[in-house]
Image 1 (cartoon, rainbow, N blue to C red):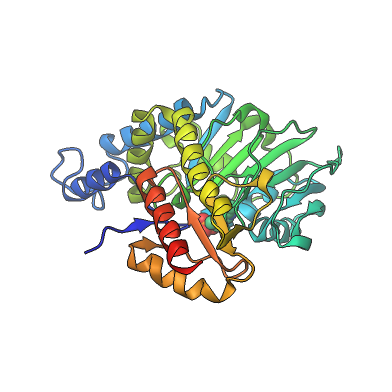
Image 2: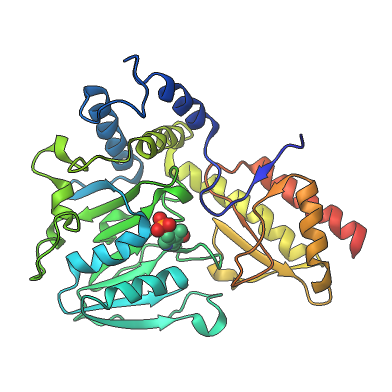
Length: 361
Ligand SMILES: *Cc1c(COP(=O)(O)O)cnc(C)c1O
């Protein structure tokens, strides 16, 4: 079999040691003689995993003490309505940088006024709007830091006059983040920190409990924070499998030197591919250069070579490139270079683009 290089956008490639470790744990968790999928989530061994997973989050992102870290179900899409349910008293502001952001806007409207302060929909979300103003009477301002489908990214932590809320589904743990600039950060694990099934929420405690509306028990973040540390994210059965893989994935991130080191590696990987896209006559990037994501890299055939798209896809597939088809709303190609995607895979993709150019340009 040809060696495969997995560039899927999510679920995506995970670190090999995390996979090996979960295979073992499914057979026998923590020397209990019972597998991970069969143990009670109230066993001490599991409570330790929950505690360590939270500690890894705190350590890797330097999360201040006045924030809680929660592991919930439902995916980032569930946070699209959970966030406004808990935080939107009268009005919220949103930056619309892609369809995920647009979906978040739609859900927020169930709870109050929503002002979309800027949108890049006019150019198919190929850039991050700038120069907008954030209304100071908004309860919060919501951004999507990385736009998975379009390959644009807000790469710095902005100063915001109101509570800043971020969907970081597809760039969490790819770079250092100044958590103190945010009131709440959430995302699905399956892009960069684990498999599908667990959603992370990092929330500054003082923003909760301000809304007048009654909240369903499961929707209220305070339920999941609980009264004591051991109750945290344990109100109902947590997704043990997904959390375990996340635990192992974060251990791996830590072993490599943390998010600071991941950022260096990710920048090198992204530059390697962007340099080739910019050099190669047959391809052209779709996102505005200054807003290019280091996680999801999108490109299309250059003018004059549009008819070669299927050929390149087939050629790349023959070389073991998996998951490089662009999202249908952008077309062309997308390579997702999440933490666990090795530099060698990016180099193999670059070599494949060069060879294709030699044969076809
Ligand atoms: C994938 C993705 C989502 C949706 O996540 P689910 O966990 O599938 O609900 C939301 N936002 C962004 C930025 C994403 O990339």
